Length: 419
Ligand code: GUN
Ligand code: ZN
Image (cartoon, rainbow, N blue to C red; front, side, top):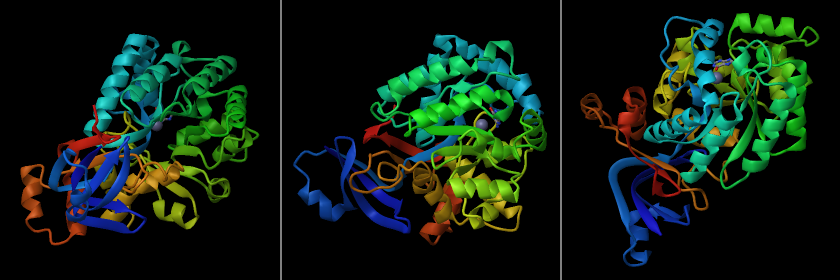
């Protein structure tokens, strides 16, 4: 048993704030939470207390879309999506055929997530089974709850990066059997996008979902016009891009669709009726020049939304930076994103998108003690700005706008310092 003290902020879904709060952790989960003054007298003698007084403690951030083999692709110059994939991304992902590279990559990747306060992520591996394997091994070692899958890709990619409908089915199935539900790991069936899969492979993805009802599905949808046009050419029988995925049984409440920038009304209706999740990736969309997500219309059409970095097209591992860019994307469309809404989104909101709100995403009894400790005055410019902050909401907004990994004072996974 241990305890963690600081300024607690969680969403239920309204913000709940405790200026001098205490989280009691036993067996990796939160066993009590409340005012420090009230809880400390009841702690068994000698219970260690990590004292973060003055700092904010929130549920660990959740990133709904990020690519493991793109840690050395981030910040690659001058291309839009399709050229970026061919010129930089596929070249780098081919290196993940080497299990040593996959293992080193997984270690760096998890270190970087934790350094940025992210405790759960939904991860694309490379096409190689060992990339997902290496990632799950490393995540399990660290006690983290991660969701990942090997990419399925059997056409329109370099030879070295192609699997087949059959091998992608077999490899994904083996990974599901080995990892899905093991400890805190979960599997996401991961056809990269319609362009890189034959109909036979999307059928295999649908079969995997039907045979393993608890697994997730992740793919990309409607990021650029060129991608939309090519997808429709490759699947002439489908009514639209989202319809391709729907016709193979790939839409549903556990389906995470990266980007969703240029959806038609009919496509939005497909997402809404299947309870699929549109995962918005603002730093990626700005970096590749793909477009601005229309969050207001998605919300109005009752589509569930999540927020994600999409590293390596995304430009930061930080969910603070990501939410700050989401704010700017709203501003470009004449709207805003209030700070509480942003912090709710990257914690509880993304947990709800995963259907995991009973496990993660809030500071409540029974949840995993996956936490991030934030210092609103981490840099001189931040500390200076904080001198004029008169409310929690103002502080949060400045923290979001100016903060990044430097604002992360500590990250906890299961109540242990994440490492
Ligand atoms: N569409 C298909 N693959 C990718 C990828 O790796 N990154 C992004 N941003 N879009 C994609
Ligand atoms: Zn992506």
